[in-house]
Image 1: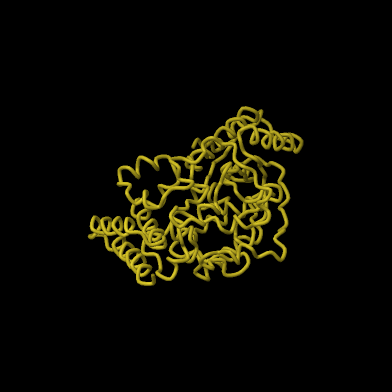
Image 2: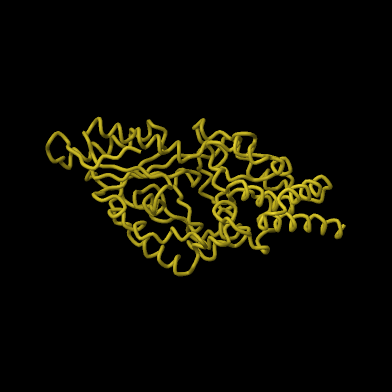
Length: 368
């Protein structure tokens, strides 16, 4: 991503009127580039750094040590000279999400809807660069740096401060007119743009997201224990998944959307118009058993350019093993699990999960 470290707007200091007009143009350009909304905040993150400190002190970040990076709470340290942050959001919900249909069919595997198409990092980063280019054409060279979940940025706090929504009880940003099925991105800049007002919370007494969480990872309103969260366990976590959490995981092999699926505000969610986010390889409703048969070369080919790469091939097999252990008893599942276990007998982590899945399948036969 191109970075310019200084700006010179017509060799003179921009006036407040100039910056107000520029802010309006930036929001319009953002919409023209495919973002549904853009907002502007300063570098003061309000009470969010204190919330983060309490979350870290409670150990709710599991083994994500990078969350404790001090620069996360200090945008001006991450990118010296930063005065404002342009925060953008982009819808990603597929036209036919089929969430409940897949989750209610234990022979299928569920992939979080954000990961079905092209890797959002690539899509949004490219659009942010185009937005920066438009600003540069209008204002002259200026300092900026773009981020898409790619550096120590407290992005949900930034989005909240920029007026894109509030952080819900499930810790996901909610927009009153658009729900929560959207990606976030940021453009740090040294332009003294006027800022937008934060949005107040509208969760009220609702706790649908807390009640639905399969692993009870939302331990209190606005508090998520990542060590119990299916999204963390199936994507970020590299080791063994705790035995007591495997049955609650069900058939979720990459991420979890349950808290968003039941959020009342998502009745206003808009389906994505981005072709890049169209589901690939029928992964919106795949048979779990068919996925176990993918070789590493096939997995690499089929997940090329997708966020699914984040879990790694071993994580992919680990997660599918759990899904198959939770599936109804079938001889072809038992045979496939046994063959895969034999192929990965020297991998302690995978072998242990495959053994668990086989035991779960055999226990179903005993119960019958």
